[in-house]
Image (cartoon, rainbow, N blue to C red; front, side):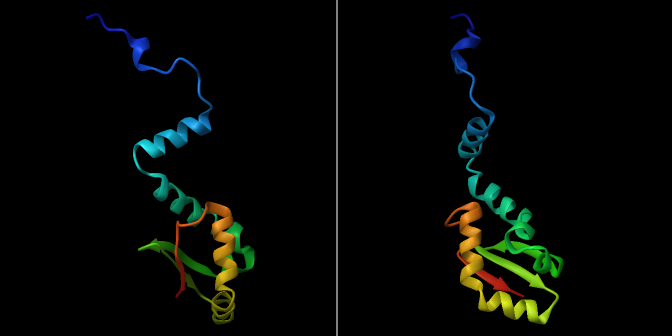
Length: 103
């Protein structure tokens, strides 16, 4: 049987966004991609004031860990935890992180 390269490719061209999403789905990397997107957009989610006083942001066991250098900012984040979680879900979707831990 002769090699036919056209039989292994899709006939139509796919937009880059949908092709990228298919690739993430095929390699089961969707959640990791959204986690990294959340971490990189932390400053955009909470604003410059909080972001400038944030030392580190990482995700462990579906919990967003945020280390803050300012006591008042830490207290403010703890009091507004549900609002911050709502902003996170709005930005990257529901189910990426289940809790916000302020360190």
